[in-house]
Length: 206
Image (cartoon, one colour):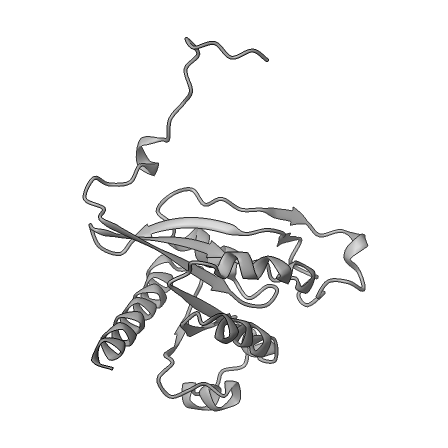
C-alpha cells in the first residue's frame, strides 16, 4: 500500500490526549501470579481504553501453564497490559500489568526497567506465588506495596497475619482491595504513591 503526503494519519482520540496541565509522569508495574486480577485492575482504573495482550488459553498449555482457575478463566496475558490514570492534574501514572504465567516471566525484567514502583497483587488462595514476585522486585530494587485482592471464595485473614505469612518488612504497606472497582484500585495506587513519597523523604535525610 502506497502512502501519499495527502493521506491523513488519525491522531489520538480526544479522550486519550494528555491534559495540558500534565508536568510529570511515572511508570508503575502491577505484578502477581496467574489470575490474581492484574488485567482487571488495569482495566478498572485506567482513564483510557486499556491495551491488553490477552490470548485464549488452549489445550497446548496443559502441563506447562498454571491451570489454577482454568474452569472460569479462558484467556491469559502474554506480554503486558497498559493503562493510564491521572493522580493529580499534574501527575500521570502509566500502568503496566505483567503476564502471570511462569513461562512469560522473562518479560518482567524489561517491564520493571524504569519503574518508579510496583503493586503486588495477592490472592489469599495461593500466597506462595507471591514470594517469587516480591523476590524479583527486591532484586531489581523496585519499591512495592502489597494489595490483597478479595475474591469471593478466598479465605480472609487479618492483615497482620498476612504480613507475617508473606514475611513483609514493617514499612511495606499492605492493603485490601477489590480489583474490579475503580475507587478501590485507585486507593491502592495512592497508597503506593504515598509510600514512594515517604521513601524519597527518608532518602533525602540520609
